[in-house]
Length: 236
Picture (cartoon, helix red, strand yellow):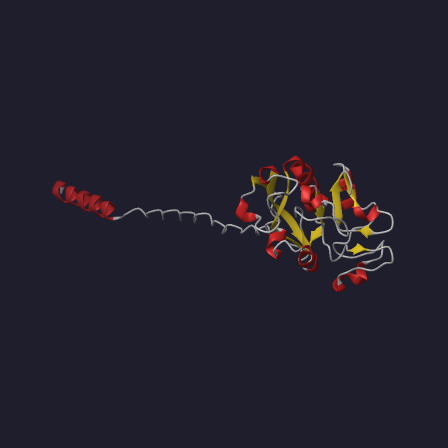
């Protein structure tokens, strides 16, 4: 009887051992946070370049037509200014002017101001690109400075021969005789002042004031003949 009871107890224990407790399901791991794709920052269009001006000595090969022995200014006293200007196409360009060393600061100061104002210039090349021919340079609407030549209608040296004068946009700002005429056909519609137009210089405008601030006079204020393109140090 005791053996039967013991057997029953063993079987009961085995039955209990065979019953497995339910295993708790593992908690579902949270999904990693979704990283939003980087937002592209729209690129900002680059603005016009800053104004720059480089001043260098003038070599003889740069002035094969506009300078010669006997000119009132020695070659060593001239300086080449390579600088930025605002074009008629509303874009920045690099041009060249030759002036006397003593007025380089004046020219850089004025053209820095005109560039900041986006005041337009048609082109800016040395007059030697036209073999020193003032008429051809003017007809091409070229802004230029030094040229060893006499003054118009005179046997005396022009202020250009001293490197102390500049002609700006000569088509839009022609040389006009006392009777209202001009030698250049492409400039005939620009003989009156005041006048609206790209690159036109008018009395008391920003160009005249910029040059006046550095002691340069405007040919548009001459009595009788008017030279609207012309600015010179001390006049003449």
